[in-house]
Each structure stands twice: as structure tokens, then as C-alpha cells.
Amino acid sequence: MAADPTAATRPESAPAPARVLEAEGLVKRYGEREALRGVSLSAGRGELVTVIGPNGAGKTTLLTILAGIVAPDAGRVSPGPREVGWVPQQPALYGKLTVAENLRLFARLERCSEPEATVERMLALTGLGDRAGDQVVKLSGGNRQRVNIAIGLLGQQSVLLLDEPSASLDPRQRERLWEFVLGLAEAGTAVVLSTHNIQEAERHADRVLVLADGELLFTGSPRRLKEAVGQEGDEGLEEAFVAFLHARGH
Ligand SMILES: Nc1ncnc2c1ncn2[C@@H]1O[C@H](COP(=O)(O)OP(=O)(O)OP(=O)(O)O)[C@@H](O)[C@H]1O
Ligand SMILES: [Mg+2]
Image (cartoon, rainbow, N blue to C red; front, side, top):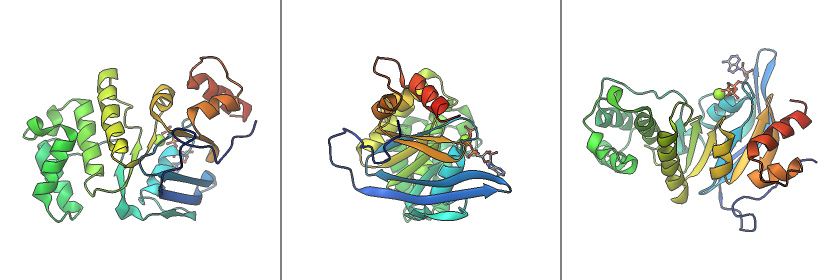
């Protein structure tokens, strides 16, 4: 059964939230290789969208284009990069600087008008006030990831993009990260994140995008993806995802 590209979001009867991110017909080529083949997507205020797909599907390419870091060969994205926060997979932090010093440095790079107030706001947001004076190298992976996310949020953008934010975290740290990200979404931030953890996509996403070989194969709620492969029992989304990819020749 073909996926319904207009499939609704959370909850499925509710009106769609105001769109704050829109991309249309994104194409990216690396030599002969087409890393993205005309991908379109949107995200609404407070919506949490996960991008899932096999290695090499084009997830990072898509997110870096949405973040304005890589230019597409065709297609358009709105809004521009200044209105979009970006959290790369590898935290780009200075390990020898403290949490507060990192935040201050990036606040200045982002040209925040009041860097000190911004640092305080980010410490409160991340719940890392008591670690402000600690070198980043001494933080756990989860707390480091919080600082990484805080830096993505310095500009107080309405859209936050994260590339595999939970990949290197233990289950407890992953849970804390999700609490944090869900809190942001509840406060109205549109969140688009990639993950290989299908279980967390199922648990937390309003909508999943399935990307394979540069093509957007599905966009809709986890439940709709299960329906698309005729899954009616209580199997997880992972089984549906694998069956879906298989049916589509991947
Ligand atoms: N800078 C680059 N130069 C050449 N090819 C690239 C470059 N970046 C990505 N690619 C290719 O584009 C395709 C998509 O890569 P991308 O990193 O976006 O996939 P991904 O879905 O993020 O994979 P993973 O799950 O492994 O992170 C791959 O075939 C990759 O080899
Ligand atoms: Mg990637």
C-alpha cells in the first residue's frame, strides 16, 4: 500500500500546527551519487519529527541542508539558516573550557545581543547550572550532549535539527535527553531529528519520515507506517520499518 504523504500528525484528528519549516524538492549530488532525490518535508510548531532510514540513506545530508550548512543542488528551504538551530552528531565543544565558557563563546559567535544573559538562560534550560564551572571534558556524554543542544538553541530559533542525538548515550542518559527534547517541543519548538533507534522514534515522534537511498518513502505517524505494511498486532515499529523497506526494495 502506498504511503499517504499527507498523513496527519499528533493526535491524528487535531488540526495541523502552524508550519515553521518547509523544504521542497531537495536534491543533492556528490559526483555520480544522488544523496537526495527530491525530498520535501515540513514541520509544525511544537511538532517532533524523526527521520529514520538505513546507513547512507541521506539523513545527515538532509539535516545539514535544512540547517543551511550544505547547499542543495536543487530545491528550496524556508526559513533560512539563522532561524534554525543545528545540533551535529559530534558535539563541537571545547573540552578544556568550562560549560559556561563554551556557552559564552558560542553566544558571542552567534552574535547574541546579551551573551551573559544567554549563558544564564542556557544553564537554566539544560539544568546544568551546578556544572557551569566544570570543564566539558569532565561531563558525562549525556550532559555534554545537553550543552551541544543548548548551543544549537542559542539563537532561540523556532526550529531545532539534531543528527542522531542519542546515539552514544546509555539508556538513562537517553531518557534524560528525551525529556529535554520533549520539553522543548512542548514549549513550541519544531524538532526534526534523525535516529537509528526505531523504538524511540515510535515512542516520541508525532511523525516519522522514512528515507532510503536519497528518497523519501514515507511520512506519517508511526501508527500509519504500521498500517502501511498491514501490521495490526502489537509488534513494534521496527518490524514494520524493516518490512516497509523490504517491500520497497531496500
Ligand atoms: N561529503 C560527501 N562527499 C561524497 N559523498 C557523500 C558526502 N556526504 C555524504 N555522501 C554520500 O551521500 C549519501 C548519504 O549520506 P548521509 O551521510 O547523508 O547518510 P545517512 O543517512 O546520514 O547515513 P548514516 O545512517 O550512516 O549516518 C551516502 O551515499 C554518502 O556516501
Ligand atoms: Mg548520518
